[in-house]
Length: 393
Length: 101
Image (cartoon, rainbow over the protein chains, first blue to last red):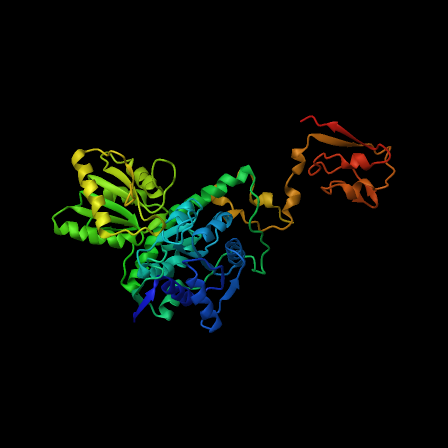
């Protein structure tokens, strides 16, 4: 029986963690993800979980402890945001290359500076090449559902990679919305026991983790890591199918909204997708053929599938909630453009940088983007394909 | 004892490497021939050697084997040619020369 609740995104993720009942959680607080370890430590104190909670002295230590615990054989998770993830940087790569299935609840927040505590994707987008699986969530329900699915994906024998489940700081992490939770027992059965083939605390074998690889071995290790990321795509779909049977809620690599016959489309990630769907509804009511593609899985990047979904569009706006500072466009746009490159007939593409540092994204702002797409489609070309949305000029 | 190089070596395919290059054999560093890094090489003159054993403990790579209280010739698989042994030898029994490869 589903449980009807009303929760913030942080509380929803903390409850998913309680239901998973991990072996170890090292964590250090940082806005806006602080509530996750805060709620979780109350579960620990109240005996609701069997987890070893490690209050570490920094995020560098949090990820280091997570790596040690995971290598030892423990199911391990943590949470962070922004500069906290920046301080984990070195360890993110170590976790991925050591093939440790750690789960990280990332509450997206701008990186400094100017100092800012609000939502944008500069933290996770900066870490996009660290070798972690990245799954994004539009609202509290998706953050919860994605976290429940996380370990099934990360620990799968064809994958064995760490996974970060992202949601927007404050917008979904602190907003209280209706949510449907699974029963504790349902989550426990769905996630199952962690059963790694090799682990440091296995008394039957001796094992060294984190070996030095000479040039004669390093590339083979990276090739194996790369193949594991490719494998993750099918595993994510298989786990989503099982999750649908359990919850009734359907997840894919991305979600399309009124895209099938759309001439102009927006590609977007996380909470602003909800706002953009409202804009689509308004414009559809006016008879405009507009649609939306919301990316759920950014790593691995579903390139062929996205190209297939967008190929019939005349004009596409890719929305980036972080800038690459390459004087050329944001990271999501670079991926989408590269996915479209193989098509014989390609949609025109414009990139919008939006919502940095928590800048409000309103329905009318998104409608402006669709209006611009209409002009681009009519003109058959894009003047200035790298734009900032809602910036004073 | 099992050798790591029997399991993985420079002709191992990526599919056959252990996950993350994890190692399941202890004490594998002896198999790694750091002697390849050497440019100078020590030459041991057993005639001049008095077996004082001053050289053995100063070797940073434990590359001067001792058997029954007497030093043997160098372990050239691991000697990096640093020359400390030649510096401490009071009898001129160790001479450093350029190694021809």
